[in-house]
Length: 168
Image 1 (cartoon, rainbow, N blue to C red):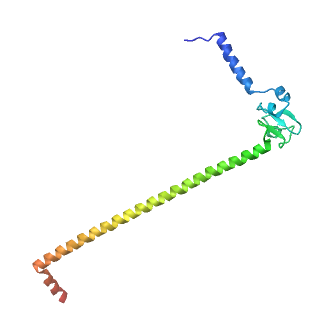
Image 2 (image 1 turned 90 degrees about the vertical axis):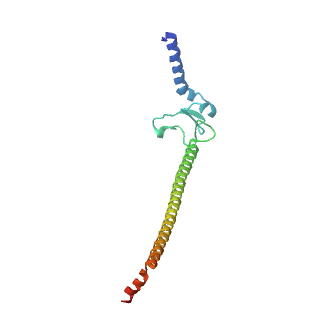
C-alpha cells in the first residue's frame, strides 16, 4: 500500500491552493488595471467606460453588481459589448431558442397525430375491406346453399308441393 509522505501532501495542498488562487481575484488586481483588456481578464472585475476605471463587484446583491457605473457603461469579461447589450442579446437568444424548442415539439406532436390518424384510417379501410370480402363470401355460400336446396326440391318434386301451398 502506498503511504503518503509529507512532501506528497505538500504538493497536493500547493496544487489546491494554486487552483483556488487562480479562480479568485483580489481587489488590487482590479484596481491596478489601466485598460479594459487587462481589467476584463478577471471574472470579478468590470470596466467602466465613463470613468475609465476598473472595479470589482459583489456576487451577493444584483443591484450592486456595477455600483460605480451605469449598466450602459459597464463592460464585463469582454470589451466590445456593454453589460446592457449583453443582457439584451442573451435574453433575445434564449427567447429564440425557447421558441425554436417549443415550435419543434408542436411540429412533432402535430406530425405524430397526423401519422396516428392516417394509420387509423388505413386500419379502418382494411377492416371495411375485410368485412366486404366476408359479406361477399357469406352471400356466395348462401346462394350455393339456396341453389343446392332448389336442386333437392326439384329432384324430389317439392316445388310442385309449394305451388299447392301457395294456391290456398
